[in-house]
Length: 254
Image 1 (cartoon, one colour):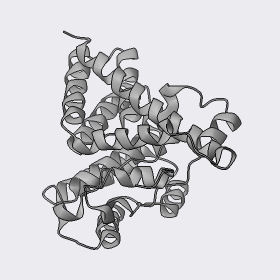
Image 2 (cartoon, helix red, strand yellow; image 1 turned 90 degrees about the vertical axis):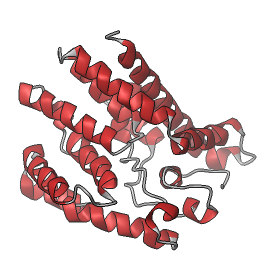
Image 3 (cartoon, one colour; image 1 turned 30 degrees about the vertical axis):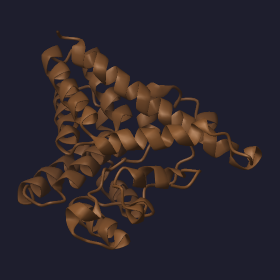
């Protein structure tokens, strides 16, 4: 593993196993500089809104799980499947403009696609990506209506079904539901499912371990990599704080 984990590489770790080839192939998340965004955007401060600053953190299937030995083709095959259900990358931006940034329209597309491909081997990938797009990019999390809150709960549950490790996003969504008076039993039950998923996920453990290592070993080229290291610290803090909050929510109704 390289000493410096660029964010795309950090995301790629989520889909790797012990095969070094799998670790070298990043998916194509949007470019993110957490340090710059913290300084430029006063509205995005603190761990609670950290989910807005991160890409989807999709836990892609490994080559061993898909049978596609070429790591580049392995990721590409899964990304191609995502794009069949909802637009990705620049296409998503264009689609948002044409559709009026409507999570309702994406909700229909999501439901139809999952129903048609519920037994597909990549459906967990799509659950992670689609739920992220609708919650974050189409701002379902900003909808406080009763219907909106029910849909927030639904898509958080979809993240759980997809074995998502995006703890900042899940943590924020569950906390919002609690603040809005959503049934605490549902919140704690879902939080417990997330907690159990994370505890049993060797990839999540490896992801945190690699990220922690990258911030615990000071760089000899301090100036050159200072911003990167600060980014890694922020990412690690978001992941940790999200996980800890999920654990608290899991105990809240006991």
